[in-house]
Image (cartoon, rainbow, N blue to C red; front, side, top):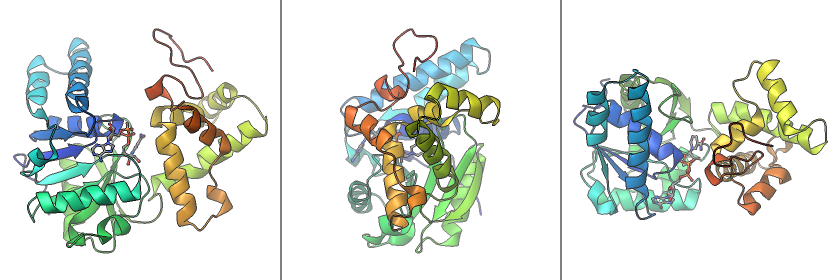
Length: 296
Ligand code: NAI
């Protein structure tokens, strides 16, 4: 099965951490990309951010100035969702909420052509449920990138009950053409990575709650002795506690309240306080402007 043609317009919805990263990946692969967000100005701001990131690569000699300019020229902010009507692939990366995502997919089904693929970057929600309200659920698929999307190679290609194998193969080939390492998975709660990652977060949070050690000690131990790239607290600060907590709640509910997946009250407190991690400047650690290392 061949990848999508580079002339295919890719629409990315949600210009947050993931949407911006996915838009960058698709534009660097050569697609015209339209980035849409309901927050006015967010898409343009995200494109400026991508330009700055690419500028750093140019300074380090890892990217040519021409490649930077060509990538940025392929990125277009779209304030109105109607501007996405000519997309051949839509990847939504909006808030992790089943009803909100279903509403968006219904809107897209009415707006985009019958051939347009509707992909979701959901971390945990059922692709089968997301597709269920549509007249053509067979056009919906999961395309789950990891944070930060331009750097992380893995992409889970997630098939719901209605997703045809040919569509999964098409997106698998497309992700490969974008320089990623895709893996096929069935739509099971949390898919593969977020399923195996749940105990990593949950047990770290239980250790913190039980007072075994503070988060900096636990993170250092997981990094230095465990061989992990990041400990659970710095990683969830990067992911965003609103996102990570929503994913935990969704997997917990999907497994009928299985204790193994029980969300942590510590993380709920952070969400309630608006301490969402790096993106809000404060999570388990503080990310004060100019601070060289986050302070716990
Ligand atoms: P974020 O909070 O950084 O960004 C979400 C963006 O979506 C915001 O800019 C918001 O204004 C926009 N938005 C919300 N509702 C919208 C709507 N109806 N239409 C258009 N824009 C809307 O969130 P983040 O971290 O980028 O996550 C987005 C999705 O990606 C979630 O489904 C999440 O589970 C998934 N994901 C997150 C990862 C992470 O590490 N943060 C990793 C992989 C997947």
